[in-house]
Amino acid sequence: MEAFLTEADAAITYDDLLAGLRATVAPNLARFPRMGRRYLDQPPQSIEALEQLSKLPASTADSLRVYLHGEYLMLYAVMHQVVYLLSIRHHRQLSFDFSGLWPT
Image (cartoon, rainbow, N blue to C red; front, side):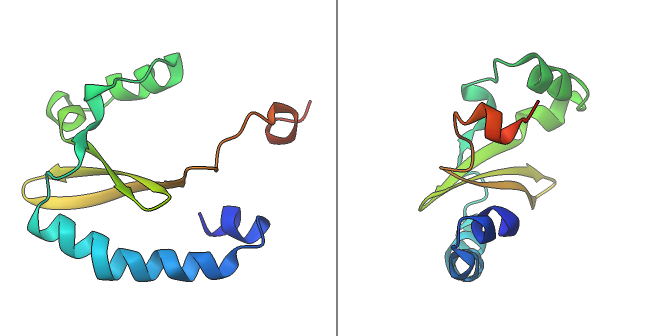
């Protein structure tokens, strides 16, 4: 995330993200760990994602949840009353600039 925001000349936004994680996201998830929608409510369609899901223990995949915070999508898991933040993506992080993302 930090690299993406730095490349987009938005390094200060990274500091804002960290502040939001501390002030809003962490307290919300501590109080309501299952507040995000279940990740598998809209299961992935790609073969790669389905393969990764198949490698998880059965109960783990069902614990995956998605939380939206501002312009960010966060993937987290709730297991044994512990919240694990797995991934944070900015809504513009993926684009259709395939040649820029995957040069030949």
